[in-house]
Length: 280
Image (tube, rainbow, N blue to C red; front, side, top):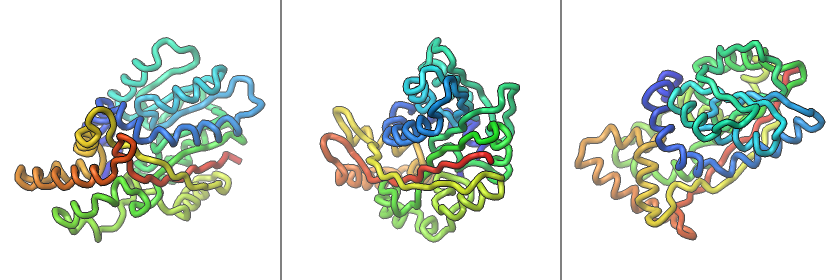
């Protein structure tokens, strides 16, 4: 289970080092979020946007490019990721980043027109309380927009690694899905329940299928291995193995990546939800 403490520490540090790979893997999600965001903000001259779990700033930067008059604040638990976002942003006007916990962060600049998150909402220890707090940061009628993964079985970047788990951690295959973690919002009924309890209007939930590029460049297999050894559930599995078992597992993983080579990239099918709601 990946929770807030992990993002403040080692997990956030790793994602900060690996932001180019993580941005690449989730790159197709941003256009879907930006299209929905611009539609929801149509008619506002200088909309105010809060990007929660902003990571290294990819979504904030994309919003700034699409909506140059918008005032955007990105917050993240990880100081390392916020530092990366600030470095990427440079001296752009109307774009700021802060270290903060979205479940409790407050500002005298509340009353946002939009709260957005790219895959950053699945890690709240108490999601109802967190979203209830986020509702208070929106103006009446303000929008909530986020993406999240659908079920493991629909996400080939993890389901293709099933042979690894069968070989080295079979108990993981029968364990219930954690309430906190990358697939915690896979069930749309759970999303509806959480947002309803938090006081949001019934959400609009649509599927997004995209190519999750794990490896590219001169040696996409090696690049994919570097990604999977650093980020996500496969990295957790590999870190738990002794050296002989880890070597065997990495060889298996290389074969899985090779089986997914297409057009010079190791690409896997990925499945997400795009969720839109609003404060009444």
